[in-house]
Image (cartoon, rainbow, N blue to C red; front, side):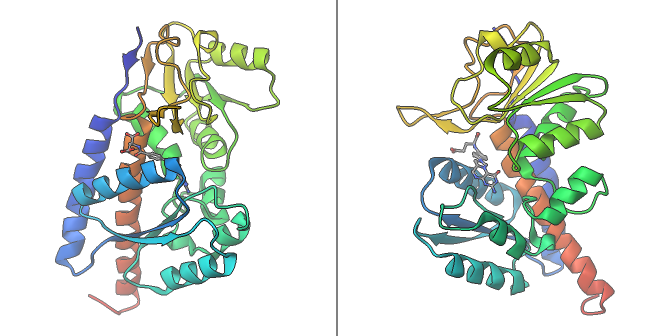
Length: 293
Ligand SMILES: Nc1nc(=O)c2c([nH]1)NC[C@@H]1CN(c3ccc(C(=O)N[C@@H](CCC(=O)O)C(=O)O)cc3)C=[N+]21
């Protein structure tokens, strides 16, 4: 049986550091604050929100929620983002995606101020990931994958990494981040073909599963000793949270991050970390402008 690569300890360690940072900021009159924007009641959004609210409390981060019906108009949503942009008391924003179909995702991403983009959805943030400039925030889930590997001292250099999924939230950015750490990365997607996909995954040292299909990764994808990061957040027929990996059937692997308690837990911690960083940067900018000491 594969061992569980727990996210909890990693999340706790990050949260502790964020807490210290937010206490220091609070002493200087800054309450690090995150806006959460949700349209509708998507179960994976609700799961993220629950996790984030709990994490925020432990990290000393304030959360303001902006909740809309699934039928919300683009105009209303953009107006809210504009307000968030102008509000000095809000340092970062998390906008759940995918957005309802009547909303133009590109327009929403373009509307958010890059310095408040703590989940790395704007093109500026993504450009920073692709060029390695260090500008902008990484998508939290992608950074969470790196943090978990780092915490357990699993090196990427020279390793073969297979990524299942090519989304902008996770597949693409996490591939670039692994590449930046000198891994050899292969991205698999819906047109890769089943057999090729299984072979590529089996040949990898580290498999990052972000396909969004419950239990898809079975014995055909794994080999002994492999490290699997399960990024999937799916809800099964009984309403339980489950990942892309069938933990029992993928048992030959060495280590698998569990769902819940794996990547998701670290993601919320990274979100708080980036919110505290955004608050700190806002304060530094104000100080440079001579507005505060
Ligand atoms: N712009 C955007 N960025 C995202 O990263 C994003 C998104 N939209 N939309 C929704 C999905 C889903 N997702 C989760 C992250 C953490 C947990 C999480 O914290 N899960 C806890 C369990 C929390 C609970 O259910 O109580 C765990 O796995 O241990 C869940 C889901 C990020 N997503």
